[in-house]
Amino acid sequence: MSECIFCKIVGGEIPAVKVYEDDQVLAFMDINPLNNGHTLIIPKKHAETILEIDPDELAAVMKTAQRIAQAIQKALNPDGITVIQLNRRAAGQVIPHLHVHLIPRWEGDELQISRWEPVAGDMEKIKEIGAKIKAEL
Ligand code: 5GP
Ligand code: ZN
Image 1 (spheres, rainbow, N blue to C red):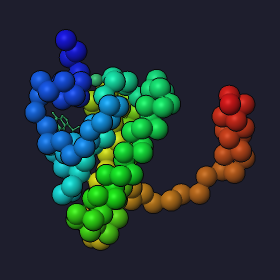
Image 2 (tube, rainbow, N blue to C red):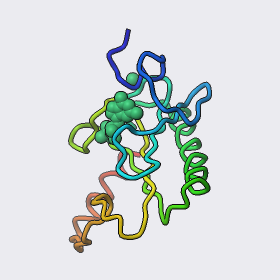
Image 3 (spheres, rainbow, N blue to C red):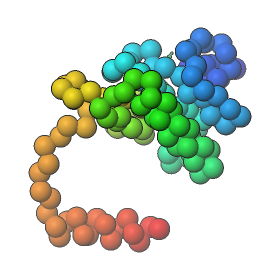
Image 4 (spheres, rainbow, N blue to C red):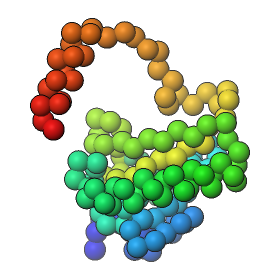
């Protein structure tokens, strides 16, 4: 049996507050919510990150993320919703089973996510790196 916590939630070995599921996707409440309504959307089939997941599975996850976001909006009426998805430890991923976070936001909630100070980059370097990425497509 898989050691992955989220696979265990999919398999019903660990309880979760589920809000939606279908053949491909499961959505459930985060047990350490950053705000009320913090919800996770995962593929039922194990995939660690955006780099490995089957594109159709990812599309199903994102489609569900939109549905759940709309439901959160109706249920909780937040001022905003942050959508984040972390890949690998350097990005802050703790559970190595792909998941999209939906975090309802309220004006003045002071969560530190997504509030960085913009600092202008070196345009030459930005162009050089853009070209490097484009060359891999
Ligand atoms: P990450 O940093 O990997 O993007 O976030 C993992 C998320 O999973 C965290 O927000 C954490 O609170 C949540 N989490 C970890 N273990 C469990 C669990 O057993 N059940 C639920 N519902 N959420 C979990
Ligand atoms: Zn898993």
